[in-house]
Amino acid sequence: TNRLKSSYSIVTTALDEMEIPYFSAKAGIFVYCDFSSVLPQKDFEGEARFMSLVVKKAGVVLSPGEAQHDDHPGRFRICYAWVMPDAVREAMRRIQLLVGDIRKDGWEDMEKRSKGKGCRAM
Image 1 (cartoon, rainbow, N blue to C red):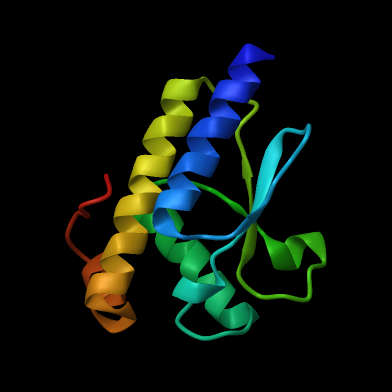
Image 2: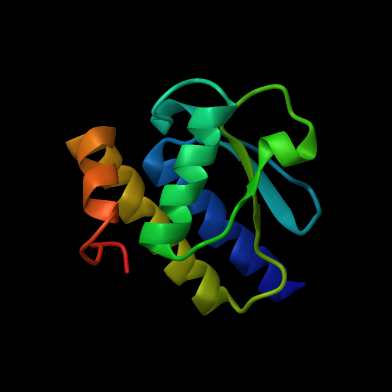
């Protein structure tokens, strides 16, 4: 339980730093958060493009909201219960770098860079 609290805090602190909204939890194994502000377009295709970029550039897998039957594109589940806090910390560091790069450089540049070279997030 201390490990869960620690991992939850790592996730929510990183989301706060990125200004990504999320639903606060009293208990559970994941945080449900809203990355819609960084989608390339505000639909499920944009959600899929963001998910693909997170996997390719950050090496992190999130559960997309569409798979949860959410009608709001851009919401994702971040599960923190099955890995150690250090792994959660590293995953959130990579997501933070990626979100920062998207906000700084825009989507077109991010997708071009994801097709070849390594990425800053990994």
